Length: 379
Image (tube, rainbow, N blue to C red; front, side, top):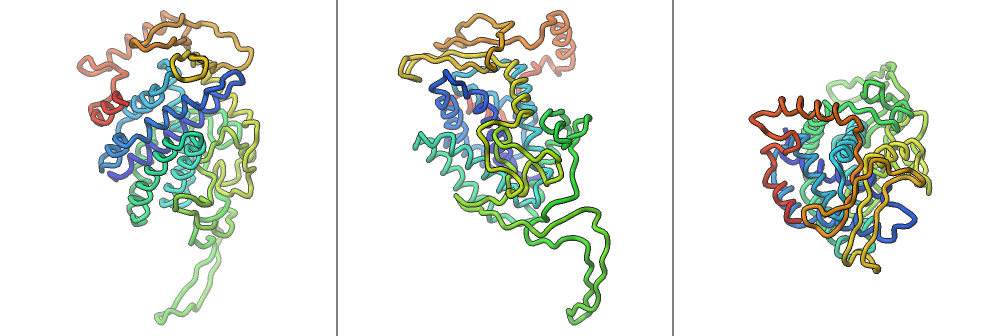
C-alpha cells in the first residue's frame, strides 16, 4: 500500500463531484451559481486541509471518503440529503475507477489529476484568490509526484485499484456505450494507442551476446494497437495528451466504445459541445430527482438571496419538505425524500442498525481519518 495515494484520490474524486455539481447548478434563473462552486473549491484547496492531506498516510474507508466529500459539498449553502450523496458518491467513484483502469501507464495518473485541476481552475477563473489556491496545490503535486519512480507510481495504482475493486455500480452512460456489463464491471478493450515509450505488441526480437539483433518473430497481439501516444505535459500548464479526467458530462464520448476510454485519443473526440451527452444528462437527472433546492441569504448576490433549482425544467417537486433552518444557519433547505415507502425505509434502517458494531451509527466515518474530517468542520 502506498502512503502517497490519498491526495490523488481526493483531487480526482473532488474533481468528478464538481463536474456533476456544475452541470446541475446551471440554471437559467440562477445568476450566482458560480458562488457555490467557488466556496466548495476554496474549501477543497484550503492550505490547512491540503497540508494535512499531503502527509504520508493510508487511504480512508469508503465511509470516511463519502463523509469527506459530503463536508466539502456542504461547505457552501448547498445541502444534499443522504440519498443524494449516496448516488453522487457512486457516480464519482465509478467515473474515476474507469479512468484508473484505462490509464495507459501508472505515471499517467498524474495527468488525469491535472486534467481535473485544470478544469477546476477554469471553474473559478473569476476569483483570483481561489485560482491561486488551485495553483499552489498543483505546484505541490508537481513537486511531490514528478520525482517518484515508475515503481512508486505502480504501487499507487495498485493501491487505488484495491480501494475501488469492490465498487460495481451500474452507470447508464457506460452501459449505453457498452463500456460496462450489466453486472457493473467495465469492459476493457484491446485496441487503441499504446503507452508512451512503448512498442506496438506483435514482434519478438532476438539478440546475440554482442547486442546485435539476429532474428525477428511475429505473433498475434490479440488486439488492434496503434503507435504510442505522445508524452503528456507534467508542468503547471500544457497538453496532457489524454482526455481521461476531463468532464464527460460536457463532451460526447465515442459511441462504439472501441477507443481506450471515454477518451484516450483526443483526435477521436470532440473538444467540447454546448449540449451534454444525453445519457450523461439522464444520469444527472436521476441525481437531480434525489436532490432538493436551497435558498441563500447574505452577500451571495446583489439581491441578498438566491435559489438553486436542481430539477429539470418543468419537473414537479413532489415530496418537497418545507424550507427551514439547518444547524442554525440563515438559509432554507428543501429535502427530497427518495424513498416513498416509509415502512420499508424504517425496516431497512432497523436492519442496518443491527449490523453497526457497538452502537456505531452507519453514517459515521471510521476512526481512520478523523483528524482530517474534523478539520473540515472548521472550513
